[in-house]
Image (tube, rainbow, N blue to C red):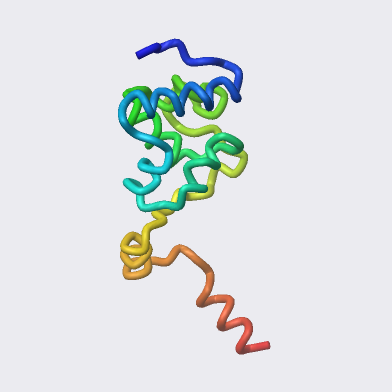
Length: 117
């Protein structure tokens, strides 16, 4: 496997797809494994998406920092414009678990405000 990761984002994207194919995988297979839509994995090409970046890097045997140094800090945390935004699990089963404990949303407060208005 060629371990030299291209710096140019479009070349890097092609390199990532090639590396996945050389391991008998694809972006579609990876999305199926993660339980997300095919578009979710494709978003990594255009925008920072830490969960997908970690999954792709793990599949290839790299760290996300090695593949996307402009998107990750040296300590292994993602660079974010909105640092307080939590990463949420997206599968239905995970959503049910989150709802059982704490939805993390303000839906109840919004409902109460709407009823009072």
